[in-house]
Image 1: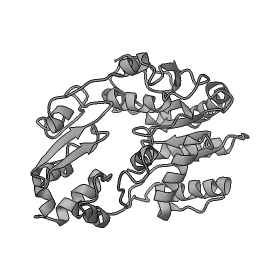
Image 2 (image 1 turned 45 degrees about the vertical axis):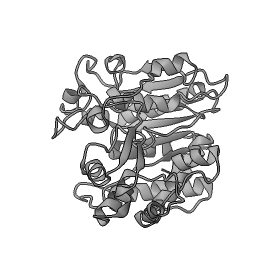
Image 3 (image 1 turned 90 degrees about the horizontal axis):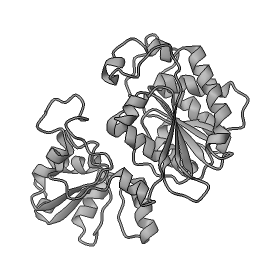
Length: 344
């Protein structure tokens, strides 16, 4: 919702109303002068939960869900559409969920974008967008990093095989880190642009981050992730929240800021701004920033996780926003996602 508000303000300052809480959202829904309200599905469903018979349910509203391939197949969506009585519902997504890419689901009757939003009104594919010059094409490099032929195996099966130990091996992590440091200036046009590094898990992210810290480099490396509040300590030297705290402390020293895990929202916004301004050279993530995040200064994605279907297109598309003549393509460097998955 933060990025959406910034886009509305760029069009016309004050055109839309943002909100930081469900309480503020309720006031906006009750105020007839609030024409455009930008919020999250979480806040809207919380409003519905707290207000069983609110007069706003009878008003004519247009409900627009952006990135509607996410968070639309559970109780929040159902609660919203069951309570509002007089609405038009629109969904926008660059990567619709079809039966083929729905993954495992508990309800086959409610797991695709069409089931949640009805028949599609309009299609504009990534091929159309590339041909029209609205986004750039991709260049994908593949690096084989473990001795196994995974090219023709479905990733659902691959992830079930006990390969995580091989993917997390110190030597492999170190080799990939050194490889990234070597190729980064070339991929980013001598650091004119910036990169995201998508990892498979929080432990892997932390391991990569710590490996980068051991190298002599002038690159500004940052990381961001969210963690569960009740993590089990058993068998771990450090909890995820402790890892994030020291990563944020390093960030504070690098940029003279004062964030912590308790001010994560501020940290997130600051990281977002600095990636867009190419002040961070490599941002290491697990899932954050891989969907819906737009930055013209981002041109490279390093990938050490299994991506396919909509997750793959979403992640790759972080790199292909048109900027100027020096940005000719989105660069993808894959250490795990296979050519078969990309071709599919």
